[in-house]
Image (cartoon, rainbow, N blue to C red; front, side):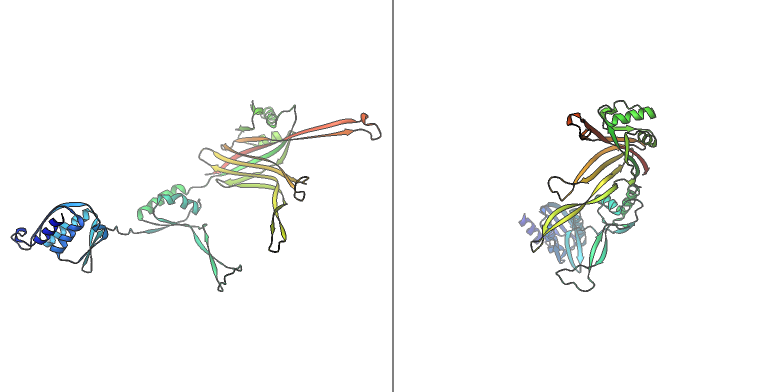
Length: 408
């Protein structure tokens, strides 16, 4: 094949290849690599300085063709052939460069958007996988360096801090992507749903004859509100559709066995956590550390105790997924273990429920039993004349919630 190409290169000017017009040429090759074709035509016909890109020289594709005509038409046909193969001819100051075609850099547009409801970071994280352009959600905050370091810092030095709480979303991309982004932002930058969660935590006094807190609640509500709660005694949750929870709260609170512990009412947006806490911070011993001279240092941590109530809703189109956590705790003196640190005694309820707008849910199952004994009688009488007393007390926690959608 190489000898065929060389022979053709030598015979291009031979009369057998010339037509009536001496300026006309004719090339006919079969099964020749692209780089060799360019070498033959440029070296023996065009007489133009040229450079071949490595990609073109390494191209192993074989091409067959027949070119005939003037030098200008031969060059035009060669350019068409190279274009069909993915190459371009570029004139660079009298030197023709033959290499792969380069797509022109697309024109980029800057788009600035001020969110109406959603967070800038949320919008960028949600939409970034759909676009080739760049999102900018950070802003640089310059803060002076006030702490001493081992490395001397020049006067007035400052540290650059990254803050994702920018108030605008900046996007840089092609015009088509900007239009697509505008359409999507109108759909995803929607109002965040909010809910109002009202609750009452009851401590219910129960006994062997009264059954569980749920059976008591079912009996009270059935009698006062004519609500059929058959089978509630075997459950640890009850769902009611009563419209207004005040009637349920009033009916239970009117019974002396239901003692109100707390009545939290929280408004919270979708995806956020709201916490209601009434109590105190108690110091508790933490880890022991040693300084350079071997002196021990005892750390102290402050832990919450009391009534702690938190909810985390996820508002959806037809319902609300609600994470509920309720804790009633207190610290007592430790009699075993680390006597210098108090012991936390707590009753905690944590669950996930799905609720509809206006629905009332009762949750429970946390119980505590206390027993005690004693003797009663006159001190100067013999012990066999004293009477023995035994006290068994059982309490359960009952949480009654009503959820009301506020928007979104």
